Image (cartoon, rainbow, N blue to C red; front, side, top):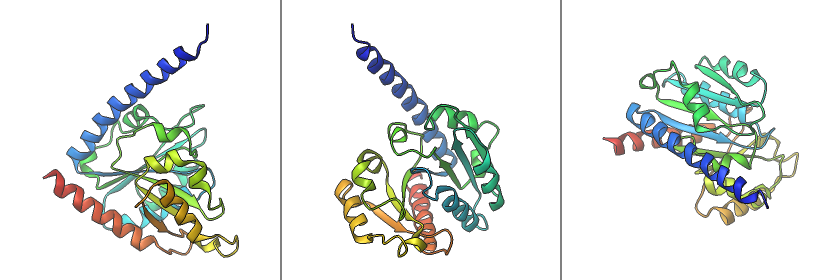
Length: 226
């Protein structure tokens, strides 16, 4: 007798439980008026550098915080703490993605009413995170210029589950002969109409436009909640 039906049922139950917790988290975030943004990408996309720059730019005007997922180390949280924003590391062990329950547990002791933005950096992975809702308002999928223009075609599910695409490490685009037009075509082929930002955490290119987008979305979300 095949074990596959049993495995499918277990997976469905896990995802159902995750969705219940994610809905509760989303209600908490909205009640507190905090804009919650998750970041997903493959390893090496520059996600942590991008988030550090984001926190640094927002911190002077807003109350910001971050949760960071990693399999084993706390290196990312230590690095992000340089932005002077509150940061907590979530060690996932053998789990290759964050789950809503992990986020819920990590928020213990934090007063969400004291935050304007909460960022959740997922484990570097473009497969598993697509199935797990974390209660976020926005999900950003990152693609670095060093990864190749066909990433959206290889991993369409994560691009379909995200709201915004961010092309990172733009300062290296010329060196790696990155075809920006092809990358944008591939993103639009998978997710028509998807918002795209091209940024460099190193030079600051595109970061102001991206931060202004976050600010507009926060204003819009707060207005809708009234």
